[in-house]
Length: 318
Image (cartoon, rainbow, N blue to C red):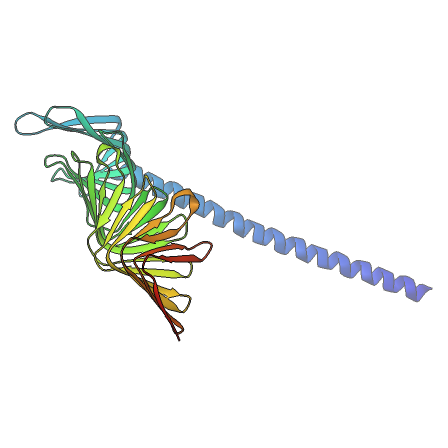
């Protein structure tokens, strides 16, 4: 009985010693953590103070008007905050730029979270930019820099651009927009990612929003890829985004079609009502390992996988 009590006492003593060591270590680490956190906070405050002290001038609710040599109003610039620096461009926060045409009517409104003004007078927008034209059309862009050249009525970007279109996201190497005509060209290799999952690859895509239209056009080789179908076009693409219609121009080939391919001309892809129907009123040629069919017209529902070859159909089965 005495031996048992002695063991219990020793166990209690060991437990107490372990708890004391644990608490001491915890307190020590807590002190270190507190000091580290305090150091971070002080560093953050210090950096903020450096940033605040770095600018030469700060103006809240900033506004300025720019005129041509003939005293014609070119644009106005408004910003929530204006910062000027000794050896860096002027920085604007929550900025809005309005451009004006020769009749002094508002032609364009650009909004962004950040922008810069160079000594040359050029305005650079950064990141996401919302553009509203005089016709009421909205354009939404995301790029590292967008330059407004109001004296020549142009907007340019020499950096990669992401353009958010109707049910699609478009990536391009650069862009140029004409303010008055409400037209834009996305330059270099262009990838169009549709919300439906289809991908279109082309070069130098022309976008026209004049008179309420939403048409995309390219005269270069184009490929259309969706699910199991890949379509190549020699002469480009016409897209009517209001009607959800895509026309692949010139000679067209539908690849990987049930182990074969279909060759035709001027293929229309109807994406209205959530569908994907390939149509051609030009001579069409289906060829695979087992069949060779020619017809005057072709109709293919890519969703139900139903193909119709119509008028003067000739077939050879192997």
